[in-house]
Length: 206
Image (cartoon, rainbow, N blue to C red; front, side):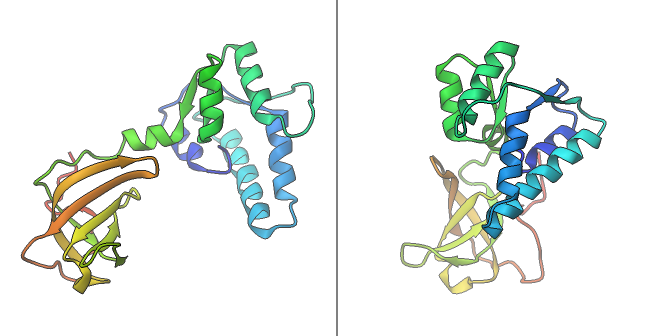
């Protein structure tokens, strides 16, 4: 969760006001990742430590480092579940497997991915939107783009407008295990290239 980094932004909004408990074995795991010989893992670990430092220096949340008896390596998820049960606490995570294990054992979970999904704007068929076509779709004529929140948009007949912004009308929305997808069809006009908007073309964010 700390490696993901979004937790710091969420905390700074003031949405979560309860105490955050960071067990020592989580810090140990971050340190191990930060010391990895793999450059990508090393950077991720260091980012996690930086995020933890940012949280501790902030004023929006009470962050406590918790000293817990060390257990054998590789049992971090289980340790988190057991500690949460002992403290009558919830687990804040973006890990799918940890989320499922915690739920099965009766431990409450705040899933950052679920929170992000819940905050995405709702779209309805017939709504007009705008997106930049960044690649071709799997079916003939399709163009693919992404909204600011990462939602994939598949637009019919947008293939000729690669690297351009296009206006489209939503035809349906699909929620998959990989995330949300929006399907649409081209409207009569292609948006000018200089515009830099992602979302409803009428500017209404409500």
